[in-house]
Length: 478
Image (cartoon, rainbow, N blue to C red; front, side):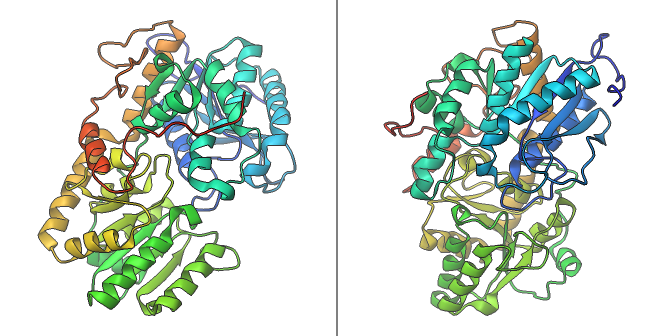
């Protein structure tokens, strides 16, 4: 096994070596499945853009197929390293926890064989976070951690449906204490880390995730519909994302029924996602639930399932729609609103998690309460009836994404955090904003443009979740 090739230096020195740990979410995994979503995209995009800044990045993920090579040259400066931890087969994310000691030890063996010495470990999700802090202590290297979702918030929203391992929350609390820096993707996540986990505000940097604006970009609606074979001149509402109960696509179907049956708005609902390219209720049980619901509501002819599609195809589906919709009742951050916005479409989103941070209510789309099909139908009706409003919001959406939510910006902000950590700076840099984060919300490397407006808008929505997180939820001890 050869060593990583030399890259260009950063400011005249050898490149920093970064180890990304992401046990279940490989950049190479197909997106849209139950355990393949925003984390896969984050790891892929951030590692690629860090490499373009001169870092050498190895992404460590679990081998889930015997066909996978030990090392996959993924992009210039980025390798994917497949570690043996548990069977070389698909294992549900929530069942991976017992294999994490093996994942940790496989990392150590690889590093010894490869001769690699890492300057910093970047943990993704709680399980890899545990591995990262364990290895960080052994190797005496700093650890940056991003959770992508936290156990207490998941339990708060999913209740008995939460299938996380019993010890998750205690492990997360230990990670919060032991990691050198914590990355929150939006101010509401920062609030969760402080209120739920007792995180030191000085350790938290808010670095929003982003969207690939070269892949997701506007195109004419009619051309997009031709590309995907959608033969209709009427209005189309599009949902793109995983088909899971917490995504509450059922809410969208119910809103569609209100539009069709009570308001006489004949609109097509295009649902993109699932476990297979062809919509299959056996492979994706939620598709079966949605089909049954559409039948019960008498709107089957207005609902179309497109199955799983990859990023290079998703643009056509967003652009085929007049409005993009996502109304989960639980969403840590949510990349799909940004994708719809990047495609120049207004987006209606539930006022939960990070969605009030990305959608500028009344400017790039609307925020609505979760689990409220009537409120969603009201906003859809207003947008579908007003072409000028849709066009104005779509243009504003694209501008907002280009200004605040691109992956090069995320990489620059992350690199600033790395350098502050590696050089021992504790106060914010005057140009990057990295380093110590005061009690008042600071977005690393950018102004918190629109955040106050988003929080105020979310707070005004009944049932919406503003930037703060309610406290008083009992959790497990560390």
